[in-house]
Image (cartoon, rainbow, N blue to C red; front, side, top):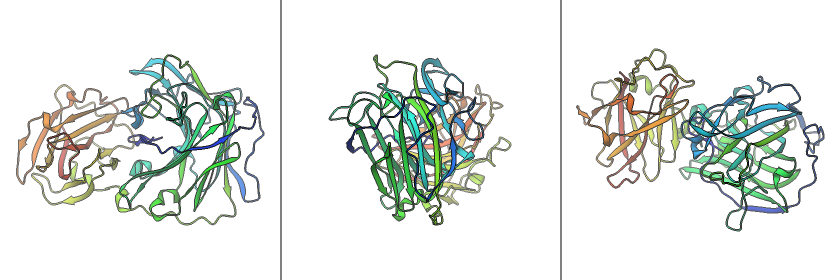
Length: 470
């Protein structure tokens, strides 16, 4: 799972599937009051964190929520709006209930919930298990997964992703190794040696029946050299993480539980998909390995270091406090190398984004929290910036995002004022970013998907400076 600006793209659009061993699941009681578990045994495991979901409400000291659509269906064109309402997430009969509902909400046709430990708890090496009863049906996408703690700084896939359990609802076939009886375990990271996002995963099918028929224990063991996946105590996959280009997995991750509806991987619900659908979580437990002498976390590579302080000169921000909260982040696979440049028109310095071409992607300024910028009138305000675009690029997508929506425009659709040193100035009406809620702006400026005259992904150095709201 990944998404742009939270969310990657925080759920991967492409997946590696290898249909695993056929497995006959052991019978597990289909209730939420079971305290039994095939949990960590042996002297090396020590229970360090857990939630038994036996209180009256969701523990706010353990769980937070991701809300909304992240502007793009969480990077996967998902169809739900995530809320923190009790209708979508609650404690009931000793279980955490995440309920996906078919209802109109904030412009979407479905609602659900996505809980995360986020800044409240993170985990590095050890054993993680949860006893879960998943929903079922075409278009349902329940998941128990993890993202790297540094996702707010470097974005996906540089933060790394560990999918302990994903189920893609629907009927499986020989050509489609997925469905209501299949669980998927996967990791995603950025392989600097290949210059691309990379995955390692495997799927496991029940011998008969659906995962939704009863509770199952989904588990993961993680040490400095390997990650291993389990269903009801039986290992079905392992991934070697010792390579130097997999440094993401030497760092801490936080937990996520959610039910998505639709998206690039599962497709949309069909007429046979019943709503509401619930994912029940009886308990979740993390065990540390007392015998492990964990190595030091590896530092970030050049391609994942945030471009801190680039924006202080490149962005001439006219919103008080905005300049101190921005972080430069990457997205997609056409990841530009970012450097300072002395080439300018009216400013003192510019940011050079060297796009390699060949695929989609870009770079954007991300705020740590939504910012009220409604003082700039959408009726007559403009987004102004100075930019130098090489001849190899015919147009660049300029995107702005808010908590509830996002809009992209193309530079080719606007006239520019010519300047010096090959720079031009664009003034794009704020009214053209039609889906942006200016009371809750999250991404005030981004450069995406440079294209050539044929509409193909283009390469070239793009210099930008003096980005302003006026």
